[in-house]
Image 1: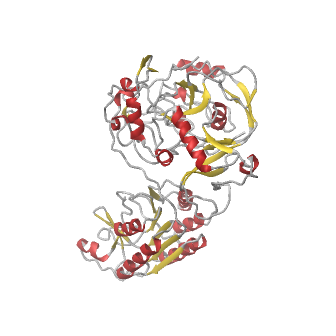
Image 2: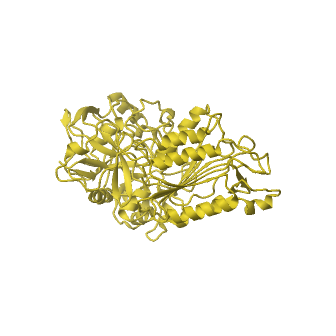
Image 3: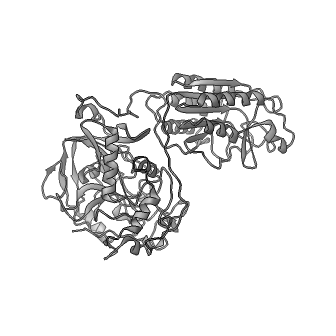
Length: 593
């Protein structure tokens, strides 16, 4: 047996971060855009395709329901007037979209859009003869639209360096802060230069127009599609760049497709399992879990699979200090399909449903007087992390962001989130809940049978398994590229990379499995609905685990777990009341009966 063997290897070294407040937008009914294309510069190098780009984007946006304000070869006065019109039109709209193709300038970290009549002889003049990007973003923010999209197909080059043209000089600079609900898309990466292209449109605009027209794509998918197409068209020479603080759901070209299907919030009484069942493994469906907040789910069809790990895999885990004796292989049949959330629940999704945040959950952990089995002895969580009841809970949390996975959630709180989300979704014949352990492993494997959904991997050290790099954040790599305060990981043994600071990560950064599910291994452990118990020694159908017990099942490994725990078969158990830095959940949408 394995209950109460969960090890919190980092509890005593939590560092502080500032709290980031989370609020999610509501939606209105309109779509408004401002599109500007500037070619005929009087004092700078004329451009070729910018007006063509603007016209192509105008058509594409109109085709998906936008009211478009257009300016071509605009002077500064005309640009200012159009932005004012745009701000007024966008008030009360569902989305505001700005597209600019033309010269741009970056001077001392600030970014400017250059009108065709700008004559600039000295750097001091740039603020007075161009239109500041910050001014545009301020106007969009004042309009109050939930989604604000800024697309810049321009070099944003410093005119006092190597000239105005897209093909000369140092290219894009970064935007220091992306306002909430905003996506800023650049035609190329910082320090690079966007191409005009040899045809009628630039490579970026060509790719963007194509992606906008694809039915069912959500806004983030539109820019992913655009990026892939630009890389292909330019032999990887031009890499689009995106800054985003928009974490909700927005489909540009409405209509059903394999990419995205919106689930209604109310269902007629005649509908049943068959109406909402998917048709192909990995099909994507959006489920609204709070007002204006939808979560993508992936279809896991009915099927039979081998649950658990073979003897050699259990032996490998034992070699690296894990008890895998409870992974007895057996055949499992699931007679009904289900939908599983594409990612673990994020901090933004938690906030939207529960109206509390990460800091609130950390405070609960500090104030909890329950004695849990932690690191081999009974103790409170605060004692395990060398803290006191009245300590600042910020000291126990890492990165705070709407897209970072939620943690410090105990089992009953995860169930409460699911119940609230289910009530809001209001889907007859279906409910949002924690997946059963069998459902979780079936979905994780996605039709595969190895150690992971990407195949077997070699363990070179306790926290050194390069084969996990592409699919999982675990103790061997969770420090790589980590920015911001988190937990001191210098005590990690045999790590794949030098280890300094790490913590839970933003969801969806690793390779998904064949059914489109991200972070099934690593990042945080995930609660399942089952009580912990031994596996049956025979084939079973629709198992739900033990009927009672002292511990609930957790699955998937974590950012501070060793390589051997990042396997599809690995299972563990925890007392259901505990909250931890590496413990979250992933909801399922399952048939009610």
